[in-house]
Amino acid sequence: MSASWTAPPPMPSKLRTRFLTELDHALAAVFARPPVVPPPDAVLDPDEKRRVGRLLRVDDAGEVAAQALYRGQAFFARRPELAAHLREAGAEEEAHLLGCRSRLAALGARPSVLGPVWYAGGWLSGALFALLGDRTSLGYIDETERRVARHLSDHLRRLPATDTATRALLERMREEEGRHAARARAAGAQPLPPPVRALMGAAARVMTTLAARL
Ligand SMILES: [Fe+2]
Ligand SMILES: [Fe+2]
Image 1 (spheres, rainbow, N blue to C red):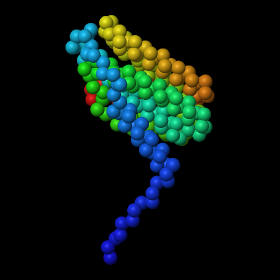
Image 2 (image 1 turned 30 degrees about the vertical axis):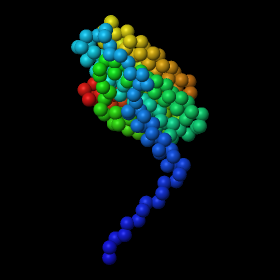
Image 3 (image 1 turned 60 degrees about the vertical axis):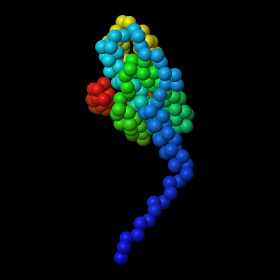
Image 4 (image 1 turned 180 degrees about the vertical axis):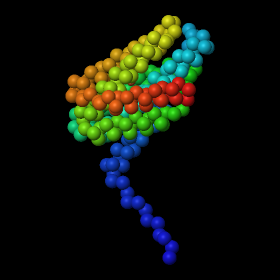
């Protein structure tokens, strides 16, 4: 007797729409291109461009993950007003990502080839924290955004003094990440336990090392 194949039951249409919307956002983030292609940077020498390109590739990867993180959290957020807050902050991360892409192009550098990995990791971690409850989810945002702001401060210190364009971009991002963290705290963020913070630190180190090279 031959085994007969049965088609899986169709996905309910609302779930299918949400799934396709998430996929659309993922592709838009990973393959984002600036609307205007900037002229090549004439201020930095080739060695400086390479160095700044490496720093910025890490920041760009962080922005891909940040968008995904907010989307994953919004997907499972319990309160509709929190989902709206998360989508709004996620939209600001889109502007950061486009800024990074634009500057990378001017430096003749490329984004990380591991974009799909950064997006998937961000989305899944956001979803996981959202499932642990709204206050824990907000705690994850607070911790992540403060970590990103510290990381941007480090990159700002390492920029060549002449690179005012990258400096302006990173300073604006740092200010807005600080605001995202403050907003999460104001909405009731619960501090994460030290082992979770340590795990996040380890994950961030792996990410920054890989994104700088790949
Ligand atoms: Fe950002
Ligand atoms: Fe942010």
